[in-house]
Image (cartoon, rainbow, N blue to C red; front, side):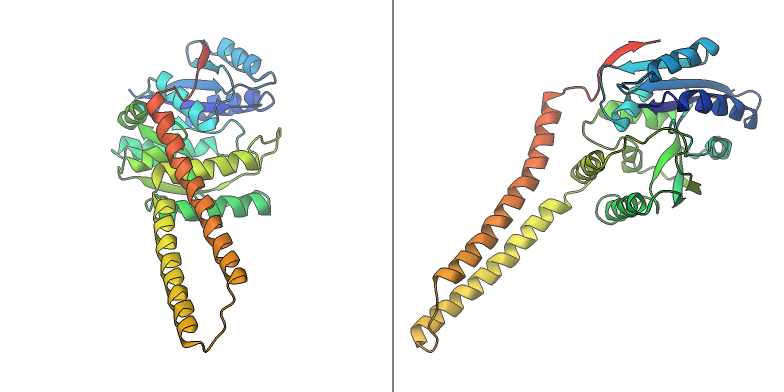
Length: 308
């Protein structure tokens, strides 16, 4: 007899919760009869009636549902970490609250887990999103795959099933400012990827803003890759070689008298170029230093207000 914990991070999902809850309960019929279910619903500081909708779900299925209310909005990946701490199943599924990811795929993922696969990913082969959103997402996934996590499947993923062992290892890491699901890949266990088409959102409005996407992009690179620091080193070497070559040119031109070297304009161009590079380099190093400070302070990535 296996127990499946299903973690659902929720943020401004009051309209979605009744439909999503009903779909998840109905999807239990696709599993073997002996399977037990646990739903860990995490309210990530929603400002609407999401928490009340979750309480209603809890009242309907008191033995199956755990509602975790965070004190504020800490981000979906921190909300997932909170759910991992309260999950007790033999394996865990993470799925969104807006039904863009098909619950019916869950039974197939569970089947792979029963065969001994500790990590099963549902990777987005296609997306029914707008052009801008699709382009930004695909660019982010390709860059992460090339420079940070080479084992990342094409299209990326947010919907996955993983063994209790992996869940406990991610909880033990307790990292801030990171993509907690990509930590599962960082653990380097072999996985199976199931391609699917991610549906467009039909209910409610997405709160996944450009600002949050940019933060995720920066957090992911800083957490999983030193490529930005390596680029600073390479750029510094290239600029140094160019500067040295230009210096030899100026000295040679001055000594030979063949060319009158104009100093002010050339110096200003070089000065502005080097200054811009230094500011960018300081900004990138500052991102790494800030996260090192954040880790050293050991502040929790989320604060739990209440648990039902």
